[in-house]
Image 1: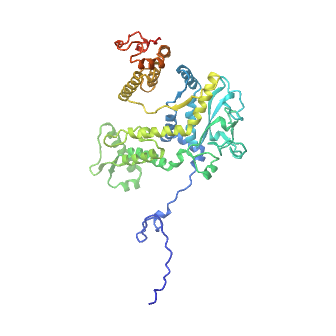
Image 2: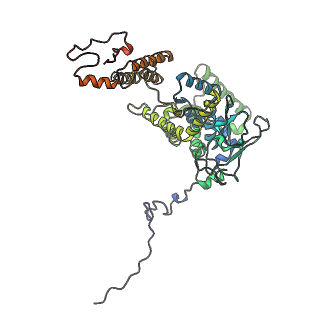
Image 3: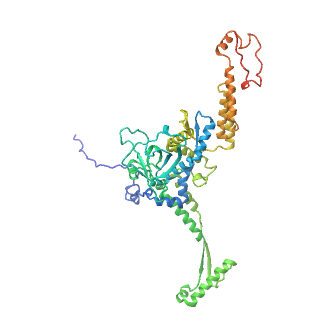
Length: 502
Protein backbone atom coordinates (compact mmCIF):
# COMPACT_ATOMS: atom_id res chain seq x y z
CA UNK A 1 0.00 0.00 0.00
CA UNK A 2 1.41 3.31 -1.04
CA UNK A 3 2.01 5.89 1.69
CA UNK A 4 0.25 9.19 1.90
CA UNK A 5 1.89 12.06 0.03
CA UNK A 6 3.98 14.43 2.13
CA UNK A 7 2.15 17.65 2.93
CA UNK A 8 4.24 20.75 3.49
CA UNK A 9 2.82 22.85 6.28
CA UNK A 10 2.82 26.60 6.11
CA UNK A 11 4.78 28.42 8.82
CA UNK A 12 2.67 29.70 11.70
CA UNK A 13 3.64 32.71 13.80
CA UNK A 14 2.82 32.41 17.48
CA UNK A 15 2.36 35.52 19.60
CA UNK A 16 2.58 35.48 23.36
CA UNK A 17 -0.81 37.15 23.89
CA UNK A 18 -4.51 36.61 23.32
CA UNK A 19 -5.73 37.48 19.81
CA UNK A 20 -9.03 37.19 17.94
CA UNK A 21 -8.65 38.34 14.34
CA UNK A 22 -12.33 38.01 13.46
CA UNK A 23 -13.34 40.25 16.37
CA UNK A 24 -10.15 42.33 16.05
CA UNK A 25 -9.36 41.82 19.70
CA UNK A 26 -5.77 41.87 20.94
CA UNK A 27 -2.49 43.39 19.88
CA UNK A 28 -1.75 43.18 16.14
CA UNK A 29 -5.31 42.45 14.96
CA UNK A 30 -5.94 45.70 13.09
CA UNK A 31 -7.69 47.63 15.87
CA UNK A 32 -7.09 51.03 17.41
CA UNK A 33 -4.88 49.47 20.04
CA UNK A 34 -2.24 48.84 17.37
CA UNK A 35 -1.45 52.54 17.29
CA UNK A 36 -0.39 52.63 20.96
CA UNK A 37 3.27 53.51 21.48
CA UNK A 38 5.46 54.93 24.23
CA UNK A 39 7.01 58.22 23.21
CA UNK A 40 10.11 60.09 24.30
CA UNK A 41 9.38 63.08 26.51
CA UNK A 42 12.72 64.09 28.09
CA UNK A 43 11.42 66.39 30.82
CA UNK A 44 14.63 65.74 32.79
CA UNK A 45 16.57 67.86 30.28
CA UNK A 46 14.26 70.88 30.61
CA UNK A 47 15.59 72.49 33.78
CA UNK A 48 13.27 75.49 33.83
CA UNK A 49 10.19 73.32 33.34
CA UNK A 50 11.19 71.19 36.32
CA UNK A 51 11.79 74.27 38.46
CA UNK A 52 8.44 75.84 37.50
CA UNK A 53 6.76 72.55 38.31
CA UNK A 54 8.51 72.36 41.70
CA UNK A 55 7.57 75.95 42.53
CA UNK A 56 4.04 75.99 41.17
CA UNK A 57 2.59 72.54 41.93
CA UNK A 58 2.25 71.35 45.49
CA UNK A 59 2.00 67.72 44.41
CA UNK A 60 5.33 68.01 42.57
CA UNK A 61 6.86 69.63 45.63
CA UNK A 62 5.63 66.78 47.84
CA UNK A 63 6.89 64.20 45.35
CA UNK A 64 10.38 65.68 45.65
CA UNK A 65 10.44 66.62 49.34
CA UNK A 66 8.73 63.72 51.13
CA UNK A 67 11.36 61.07 50.50
CA UNK A 68 14.29 63.46 51.05
CA UNK A 69 12.91 64.75 54.35
CA UNK A 70 12.07 61.28 55.61
CA UNK A 71 15.53 59.94 54.73
CA UNK A 72 17.19 62.67 56.83
CA UNK A 73 14.59 63.16 59.56
CA UNK A 74 15.89 61.05 62.45
CA UNK A 75 19.64 60.92 61.85
CA UNK A 76 21.82 58.03 62.99
CA UNK A 77 22.84 56.11 66.08
CA UNK A 78 26.62 55.97 66.60
CA UNK A 79 28.07 52.75 67.97
CA UNK A 80 31.54 53.13 69.42
CA UNK A 81 33.68 52.37 72.46
CA UNK A 82 33.83 56.11 73.13
CA UNK A 83 31.97 57.44 76.19
CA UNK A 84 28.43 58.72 75.55
CA UNK A 85 29.44 62.32 76.25
CA UNK A 86 31.95 62.22 73.41
CA UNK A 87 29.36 60.91 70.96
CA UNK A 88 26.92 63.62 72.03
CA UNK A 89 29.59 66.21 71.25
CA UNK A 90 29.97 64.66 67.80
CA UNK A 91 26.22 65.01 67.18
CA UNK A 92 26.36 68.66 68.24
CA UNK A 93 29.12 69.26 65.70
CA UNK A 94 26.98 67.61 63.01
CA UNK A 95 24.09 69.96 63.87
CA UNK A 96 26.43 72.94 63.95
CA UNK A 97 27.63 72.24 60.41
CA UNK A 98 24.14 71.51 59.09
CA UNK A 99 25.06 68.02 57.94
CA UNK A 100 21.52 66.63 57.73
CA UNK A 101 20.05 69.78 56.19
CA UNK A 102 22.67 69.68 53.44
CA UNK A 103 22.12 65.96 52.85
CA UNK A 104 18.40 66.62 52.53
CA UNK A 105 19.07 69.17 49.79
CA UNK A 106 21.38 66.77 47.95
CA UNK A 107 18.59 64.17 47.89
CA UNK A 108 15.98 66.74 46.83
CA UNK A 109 17.96 68.03 43.86
CA UNK A 110 18.87 64.51 42.77
CA UNK A 111 15.17 63.64 42.67
CA UNK A 112 14.20 66.88 40.92
CA UNK A 113 17.00 67.11 38.35
CA UNK A 114 18.10 63.48 38.13
CA UNK A 115 21.46 64.01 39.78
CA UNK A 116 23.42 65.99 42.36
CA UNK A 117 26.47 65.75 44.59
CA UNK A 118 27.36 66.78 48.11
CA UNK A 119 30.86 68.30 48.14
CA UNK A 120 32.75 67.50 51.37
CA UNK A 121 34.33 70.87 52.21
CA UNK A 122 37.74 70.43 53.87
CA UNK A 123 39.53 73.69 54.56
CA UNK A 124 43.14 73.91 53.39
CA UNK A 125 43.07 70.92 51.01
CA UNK A 126 43.09 70.86 47.23
CA UNK A 127 39.67 69.50 46.17
CA UNK A 128 41.14 68.01 42.97
CA UNK A 129 43.26 65.55 44.96
CA UNK A 130 42.03 62.20 46.33
CA UNK A 131 40.63 62.35 49.85
CA UNK A 132 42.78 60.84 52.62
CA UNK A 133 40.94 61.00 55.95
CA UNK A 134 44.15 60.32 57.87
CA UNK A 135 45.52 63.67 56.63
CA UNK A 136 42.54 65.70 57.88
CA UNK A 137 43.43 67.75 60.94
CA UNK A 138 41.35 69.30 63.69
CA UNK A 139 38.59 71.74 62.62
CA UNK A 140 39.27 71.23 58.89
CA UNK A 141 35.92 69.69 57.92
CA UNK A 142 33.41 72.51 57.33
CA UNK A 143 30.31 70.68 56.09
CA UNK A 144 28.61 69.64 52.84
CA UNK A 145 27.93 71.86 49.84
CA UNK A 146 24.93 70.64 47.75
CA UNK A 147 25.47 71.02 43.98
CA UNK A 148 22.89 69.90 41.42
CA UNK A 149 23.78 68.49 37.99
CA UNK A 150 23.31 71.86 36.26
CA UNK A 151 26.02 73.43 38.42
CA UNK A 152 28.56 70.78 37.40
CA UNK A 153 30.42 69.63 34.34
CA UNK A 154 31.54 66.01 34.83
CA UNK A 155 34.72 64.78 33.16
CA UNK A 156 33.02 62.53 30.61
CA UNK A 157 36.32 61.68 28.92
CA UNK A 158 38.07 60.81 32.18
CA UNK A 159 36.22 58.10 34.09
CA UNK A 160 37.15 56.03 37.12
CA UNK A 161 38.61 52.79 35.79
CA UNK A 162 40.10 54.37 32.71
CA UNK A 163 43.64 54.43 34.13
CA UNK A 164 45.85 51.62 35.48
CA UNK A 165 45.63 51.26 39.22
CA UNK A 166 42.14 52.67 39.60
CA UNK A 167 40.35 50.85 42.42
CA UNK A 168 37.35 48.75 41.54
CA UNK A 169 34.17 49.56 43.39
CA UNK A 170 30.86 51.42 43.23
CA UNK A 171 32.52 54.47 41.62
CA UNK A 172 33.77 52.45 38.64
CA UNK A 173 32.60 54.14 35.42
CA UNK A 174 31.67 57.46 37.10
CA UNK A 175 33.42 60.74 36.25
CA UNK A 176 36.75 61.26 37.94
CA UNK A 177 36.30 65.01 38.34
CA UNK A 178 33.49 67.55 38.56
CA UNK A 179 34.10 71.13 37.43
CA UNK A 180 31.74 73.67 38.93
CA UNK A 181 29.88 76.03 36.60
CA UNK A 182 30.40 79.57 37.83
CA UNK A 183 27.09 81.45 37.93
CA UNK A 184 26.66 85.13 37.15
CA UNK A 185 26.46 86.00 40.85
CA UNK A 186 29.78 84.36 41.64
CA UNK A 187 28.32 82.52 44.64
CA UNK A 188 30.07 79.28 43.67
CA UNK A 189 33.81 79.50 42.99
CA UNK A 190 35.47 77.64 40.14
CA UNK A 191 36.46 74.25 41.54
CA UNK A 192 37.75 70.95 40.22
CA UNK A 193 36.49 68.28 42.62
CA UNK A 194 37.81 64.73 42.86
CA UNK A 195 35.16 62.01 42.99
CA UNK A 196 36.38 60.77 46.41
CA UNK A 197 35.31 64.09 47.94
CA UNK A 198 31.65 63.91 46.97
CA UNK A 199 28.45 62.07 47.84
CA UNK A 200 26.90 61.31 44.45
CA UNK A 201 23.18 60.64 43.89
CA UNK A 202 21.51 60.01 40.52
CA UNK A 203 17.76 60.21 41.14
CA UNK A 204 16.27 57.28 39.17
CA UNK A 205 19.11 55.20 37.75
CA UNK A 206 19.04 54.58 33.99
CA UNK A 207 20.35 51.74 31.80
CA UNK A 208 23.76 52.24 30.24
CA UNK A 209 22.90 53.83 26.88
CA UNK A 210 20.26 56.12 28.34
CA UNK A 211 22.66 57.11 31.10
CA UNK A 212 25.15 58.20 28.46
CA UNK A 213 22.53 60.46 26.86
CA UNK A 214 22.11 62.18 30.24
CA UNK A 215 25.85 62.84 30.71
CA UNK A 216 26.07 59.91 33.15
CA UNK A 217 23.30 61.28 35.35
CA UNK A 218 19.95 59.71 36.14
CA UNK A 219 16.29 60.54 35.62
CA UNK A 220 14.08 63.06 37.38
CA UNK A 221 11.33 61.35 39.37
CA UNK A 222 8.82 63.66 37.67
CA UNK A 223 9.47 62.42 34.13
CA UNK A 224 7.87 58.99 34.53
CA UNK A 225 4.65 60.38 35.98
CA UNK A 226 4.45 63.55 33.89
CA UNK A 227 1.24 62.53 32.10
CA UNK A 228 -0.33 61.44 35.41
CA UNK A 229 0.61 64.79 36.97
CA UNK A 230 -1.09 66.66 34.15
CA UNK A 231 -4.16 64.42 34.44
CA UNK A 232 -4.38 64.97 38.20
CA UNK A 233 -3.96 68.76 38.03
CA UNK A 234 -6.33 69.02 35.04
CA UNK A 235 -9.00 67.06 36.88
CA UNK A 236 -8.57 69.17 40.00
CA UNK A 237 -8.76 72.43 38.06
CA UNK A 238 -11.71 71.21 36.01
CA UNK A 239 -13.60 70.31 39.17
CA UNK A 240 -12.85 73.75 40.60
CA UNK A 241 -14.20 75.48 37.50
CA UNK A 242 -17.40 73.44 37.69
CA UNK A 243 -18.19 75.24 40.95
CA UNK A 244 -18.92 78.38 38.95
CA UNK A 245 -21.49 76.44 36.89
CA UNK A 246 -23.04 74.53 39.76
CA UNK A 247 -26.11 76.84 39.78
CA UNK A 248 -27.23 77.66 36.24
CA UNK A 249 -30.29 79.87 35.58
CA UNK A 250 -32.25 80.34 32.36
CA UNK A 251 -34.71 83.13 31.51
CA UNK A 252 -37.09 82.73 28.57
CA UNK A 253 -38.29 85.92 26.86
CA UNK A 254 -40.97 85.90 24.16
CA UNK A 255 -39.68 87.38 20.88
CA UNK A 256 -36.06 87.63 22.07
CA UNK A 257 -34.60 87.39 18.55
CA UNK A 258 -36.79 90.25 17.32
CA UNK A 259 -35.78 92.43 20.28
CA UNK A 260 -32.09 91.79 19.63
CA UNK A 261 -32.56 92.42 15.92
CA UNK A 262 -34.39 95.70 16.56
CA UNK A 263 -31.78 96.96 18.98
CA UNK A 264 -32.17 100.52 20.27
CA UNK A 265 -34.72 101.16 23.00
CA UNK A 266 -36.15 97.65 22.82
CA UNK A 267 -32.79 96.00 23.49
CA UNK A 268 -31.84 98.58 26.12
CA UNK A 269 -35.13 97.96 27.87
CA UNK A 270 -34.47 94.21 27.94
CA UNK A 271 -30.98 94.74 29.38
CA UNK A 272 -32.39 97.10 32.00
CA UNK A 273 -34.95 94.48 32.95
CA UNK A 274 -32.25 91.80 33.35
CA UNK A 275 -30.24 94.19 35.49
CA UNK A 276 -33.29 94.76 37.67
CA UNK A 277 -33.91 91.03 38.02
CA UNK A 278 -30.30 90.45 39.08
CA UNK A 279 -30.42 93.33 41.57
CA UNK A 280 -33.60 92.22 43.28
CA UNK A 281 -32.50 88.57 43.34
CA UNK A 282 -29.32 89.56 45.14
CA UNK A 283 -30.99 91.79 47.74
CA UNK A 284 -34.41 90.32 48.48
CA UNK A 285 -34.44 87.02 46.59
CA UNK A 286 -37.23 88.31 44.30
CA UNK A 287 -37.57 87.72 40.57
CA UNK A 288 -39.64 90.36 38.75
CA UNK A 289 -40.64 89.37 35.22
CA UNK A 290 -43.40 89.57 32.68
CA UNK A 291 -46.24 87.11 32.97
CA UNK A 292 -45.25 85.47 29.68
CA UNK A 293 -41.58 85.09 30.66
CA UNK A 294 -40.21 81.90 32.21
CA UNK A 295 -37.41 81.56 34.78
CA UNK A 296 -35.72 78.22 35.63
CA UNK A 297 -32.79 77.01 37.74
CA UNK A 298 -30.62 73.94 37.00
CA UNK A 299 -28.55 72.11 39.61
CA UNK A 300 -25.30 70.37 38.59
CA UNK A 301 -24.54 66.96 40.12
CA UNK A 302 -20.92 66.43 41.24
CA UNK A 303 -21.29 62.72 41.91
CA UNK A 304 -18.38 60.63 40.64
CA UNK A 305 -15.77 63.40 40.55
CA UNK A 306 -14.32 62.43 43.92
CA UNK A 307 -13.80 58.83 42.74
CA UNK A 308 -12.04 60.02 39.57
CA UNK A 309 -9.72 62.34 41.51
CA UNK A 310 -8.97 59.58 44.02
CA UNK A 311 -7.99 57.22 41.20
CA UNK A 312 -5.55 59.76 39.76
CA UNK A 313 -4.16 60.35 43.25
CA UNK A 314 -3.65 56.63 43.77
CA UNK A 315 -1.77 56.40 40.49
CA UNK A 316 0.58 59.15 41.65
CA UNK A 317 0.97 57.45 45.02
CA UNK A 318 1.87 54.15 43.38
CA UNK A 319 4.28 55.75 40.90
CA UNK A 320 6.15 57.56 43.68
CA UNK A 321 6.06 54.72 46.24
CA UNK A 322 4.60 57.21 48.71
CA UNK A 323 1.37 56.12 50.45
CA UNK A 324 -1.72 58.32 50.36
CA UNK A 325 -1.46 58.97 54.08
CA UNK A 326 1.98 60.58 53.53
CA UNK A 327 1.51 62.17 50.11
CA UNK A 328 -1.97 63.61 50.62
CA UNK A 329 -2.38 63.29 54.39
CA UNK A 330 -5.36 61.06 53.62
CA UNK A 331 -6.11 57.66 55.12
CA UNK A 332 -7.35 54.96 52.73
CA UNK A 333 -11.05 54.18 52.63
CA UNK A 334 -12.48 50.94 53.92
CA UNK A 335 -13.33 49.11 57.12
CA UNK A 336 -10.69 49.66 59.82
CA UNK A 337 -8.36 51.22 57.24
CA UNK A 338 -5.90 53.56 58.95
CA UNK A 339 -2.97 53.47 56.54
CA UNK A 340 -0.64 52.12 59.24
CA UNK A 341 0.44 49.09 57.21
CA UNK A 342 1.06 51.26 54.12
CA UNK A 343 3.11 53.68 56.19
CA UNK A 344 5.15 50.88 57.73
CA UNK A 345 5.95 49.49 54.27
CA UNK A 346 6.89 52.96 53.07
CA UNK A 347 9.23 53.55 56.01
CA UNK A 348 10.82 50.15 55.39
CA UNK A 349 11.50 51.30 51.83
CA UNK A 350 12.98 54.54 53.15
CA UNK A 351 15.32 52.52 55.40
CA UNK A 352 16.46 50.54 52.37
CA UNK A 353 17.09 53.75 50.40
CA UNK A 354 19.09 55.15 53.29
CA UNK A 355 21.31 52.08 53.37
CA UNK A 356 21.83 51.84 49.60
CA UNK A 357 21.92 55.49 48.49
CA UNK A 358 23.47 57.53 51.30
CA UNK A 359 24.78 54.94 53.78
CA UNK A 360 28.43 54.89 52.61
CA UNK A 361 28.46 58.67 52.20
CA UNK A 362 27.04 59.32 55.67
CA UNK A 363 29.63 57.00 57.23
CA UNK A 364 32.39 58.90 55.42
CA UNK A 365 30.95 62.20 56.67
CA UNK A 366 30.89 61.07 60.30
CA UNK A 367 34.44 59.74 60.12
CA UNK A 368 35.54 63.10 58.73
CA UNK A 369 33.56 64.83 61.46
CA UNK A 370 35.21 62.68 64.13
CA UNK A 371 38.73 63.45 62.89
CA UNK A 372 37.94 67.16 62.55
CA UNK A 373 36.37 67.34 66.03
CA UNK A 374 38.79 65.28 68.12
CA UNK A 375 41.97 65.42 66.00
CA UNK A 376 42.30 61.64 65.64
CA UNK A 377 40.71 58.79 63.70
CA UNK A 378 37.74 56.96 65.22
CA UNK A 379 38.26 53.57 66.88
CA UNK A 380 37.83 50.34 64.95
CA UNK A 381 34.45 49.78 66.63
CA UNK A 382 33.08 53.03 65.18
CA UNK A 383 30.02 52.52 63.00
CA UNK A 384 26.67 54.20 62.32
CA UNK A 385 23.14 52.91 62.02
CA UNK A 386 20.13 54.86 60.76
CA UNK A 387 17.54 55.43 63.45
CA UNK A 388 14.11 53.87 63.14
CA UNK A 389 11.56 56.12 61.43
CA UNK A 390 8.58 54.45 63.05
CA UNK A 391 7.53 56.23 66.23
CA UNK A 392 6.22 53.91 68.92
CA UNK A 393 2.93 54.62 70.65
CA UNK A 394 2.82 54.98 74.45
CA UNK A 395 1.52 51.41 75.00
CA UNK A 396 4.24 50.06 72.70
CA UNK A 397 6.91 52.04 74.59
CA UNK A 398 5.63 50.74 77.93
CA UNK A 399 5.61 47.15 76.65
CA UNK A 400 9.15 47.44 75.25
CA UNK A 401 10.41 49.02 78.50
CA UNK A 402 8.91 46.19 80.56
CA UNK A 403 10.36 43.43 78.39
CA UNK A 404 13.86 44.91 78.07
CA UNK A 405 14.19 45.84 81.74
CA UNK A 406 13.05 42.36 82.77
CA UNK A 407 15.60 40.76 80.45
CA UNK A 408 18.39 42.99 81.79
CA UNK A 409 17.43 42.12 85.38
CA UNK A 410 17.44 38.41 84.62
CA UNK A 411 20.88 38.63 82.99
CA UNK A 412 22.19 40.59 85.98
CA UNK A 413 20.79 38.12 88.50
CA UNK A 414 22.37 35.27 86.54
CA UNK A 415 25.73 37.13 86.82
CA UNK A 416 26.07 37.19 83.02
CA UNK A 417 26.41 40.99 82.99
CA UNK A 418 27.55 43.32 85.75
CA UNK A 419 25.92 46.40 87.24
CA UNK A 420 27.53 48.97 84.93
CA UNK A 421 26.59 47.02 81.80
CA UNK A 422 23.02 46.76 83.03
CA UNK A 423 22.84 50.52 83.52
CA UNK A 424 24.28 51.13 80.03
CA UNK A 425 21.67 48.86 78.47
CA UNK A 426 18.87 50.62 80.32
CA UNK A 427 20.10 54.06 79.29
CA UNK A 428 20.37 52.92 75.67
CA UNK A 429 16.69 52.00 75.92
CA UNK A 430 15.87 55.64 76.66
CA UNK A 431 16.57 56.56 73.02
CA UNK A 432 13.53 54.56 71.94
CA UNK A 433 11.15 54.75 74.88
CA UNK A 434 12.33 57.69 77.00
CA UNK A 435 12.61 55.49 80.10
CA UNK A 436 15.78 55.51 82.28
CA UNK A 437 17.00 58.72 80.66
CA UNK A 438 18.04 60.00 84.12
CA UNK A 439 20.94 57.52 84.32
CA UNK A 440 24.03 59.75 84.16
CA UNK A 441 27.66 59.11 83.27
CA UNK A 442 28.59 59.58 86.94
CA UNK A 443 26.18 56.82 87.98
CA UNK A 444 27.65 54.46 85.39
CA UNK A 445 31.19 55.34 86.48
CA UNK A 446 30.32 54.60 90.11
CA UNK A 447 28.81 51.27 89.03
CA UNK A 448 32.03 50.42 87.17
CA UNK A 449 34.04 51.11 90.33
CA UNK A 450 31.70 48.86 92.32
CA UNK A 451 32.08 46.12 89.72
CA UNK A 452 35.85 46.42 89.84
CA UNK A 453 35.82 46.18 93.63
CA UNK A 454 33.58 43.13 93.48
CA UNK A 455 35.92 41.45 91.00
CA UNK A 456 38.91 42.12 93.26
CA UNK A 457 37.12 40.56 96.25
CA UNK A 458 35.81 37.60 94.27
CA UNK A 459 37.13 34.14 95.40
CA UNK A 460 39.79 32.40 93.36
CA UNK A 461 38.44 29.53 91.20
CA UNK A 462 41.05 27.17 92.68
CA UNK A 463 39.80 27.93 96.19
CA UNK A 464 36.25 27.23 95.08
CA UNK A 465 37.29 23.85 93.71
CA UNK A 466 39.18 23.07 96.94
CA UNK A 467 36.19 23.96 99.09
CA UNK A 468 33.87 21.87 96.94
CA UNK A 469 36.20 18.89 97.20
CA UNK A 470 36.22 19.26 101.02
CA UNK A 471 32.43 18.97 101.04
CA UNK A 472 31.77 22.51 102.18
CA UNK A 473 31.30 26.01 100.88
CA UNK A 474 33.97 28.64 100.62
CA UNK A 475 34.52 30.40 103.95
CA UNK A 476 32.81 27.76 106.18
CA UNK A 477 33.58 24.29 107.38
CA UNK A 478 31.59 21.24 106.29
CA UNK A 479 28.28 21.02 108.15
CA UNK A 480 28.36 24.71 109.05
CA UNK A 481 25.12 26.64 108.56
CA UNK A 482 25.15 28.63 105.27
CA UNK A 483 25.49 32.38 105.64
CA UNK A 484 22.36 34.52 105.93
CA UNK A 485 20.97 36.99 103.40
CA UNK A 486 23.33 39.66 102.05
CA UNK A 487 23.74 42.93 103.83
CA UNK A 488 22.40 46.02 102.11
CA UNK A 489 25.78 47.76 102.25
CA UNK A 490 27.64 45.07 100.33
CA UNK A 491 28.83 45.90 96.78
CA UNK A 492 26.20 45.10 94.12
CA UNK A 493 23.80 44.23 96.91
CA UNK A 494 25.57 40.85 97.23
CA UNK A 495 27.68 39.35 100.07
CA UNK A 496 31.38 40.04 99.79
CA UNK A 497 33.20 36.77 99.23
CA UNK A 498 35.97 35.89 101.73
CA UNK A 499 39.10 34.31 100.33
CA UNK A 500 39.84 30.94 101.96
CA UNK A 501 43.11 30.66 103.87
CA UNK A 502 45.25 27.63 104.25
